[in-house]
Every structure is written in C-alpha cells, then in structure tokens.
Length: 132
Image: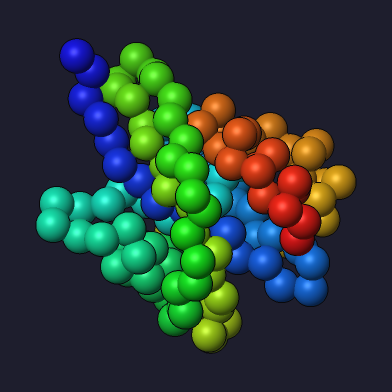
C-alpha cells in the first residue's frame, strides 16, 4: 500500500477571483498551479495546518472559514495525496513566497485555463460549480 499524504489547500477568494499559486520549478510537481497550503502534520487539524502554512509560505495572517465536503485524492509514484480544501481569507498582505514562482488572482474562466496539479483539478471544478 502506498503512503497517504494528507494536505490542505486554501480557496482564497476576493472580488470573485481565486488566489492561484504556481509551484516552484525544481520541486515535486514544479510548474503546476495549486491551492496555497501544504502537508497536515501529525496531530494537527486541517484548519490549524492551513493557518500555519499560509503564515509560513506568505507571512500572512488568515481567517479559516468553511471546508469543502469532499476530500480529493490522486495517486502518484511517491504516494497518494489526500487534499482537503478550505475557504480562507487573508487578514494581512502577502509579504513573501517561499514555495511558489508566481501568485495570481484568477476568474473562473482563467482558472480553467491554468495547468493545475492533478490532485487540484477536481477541486477546481467543484469550486467553479459553486461560483467564485
């Protein structure tokens, strides 16, 4: 059985646009777009992990809101990624990026045109179906 890797991603929506993050080249899945976030540590809730990850990656404070009902999974060579997506708001400005080459705010139409990490594709479809 492959290792399960629990991760959390932030659906940060502002003015009907979603914050998309492009993974740094040289990292696993480098060059793909994804939700900001990261691994859920042992004995950590998805909500606590997301708040921590947003601060570590962006230096930003956040408010964690509602979680999507579905967990999205994708099998890779290195294991199975289990993605929980949670709506969040930024309470301060992004002052750094350490995991991503690019950040951008995208509309539903623009989001459909990005090259998303395979785990994130069904989650993006779910968000679009609900509307930004």
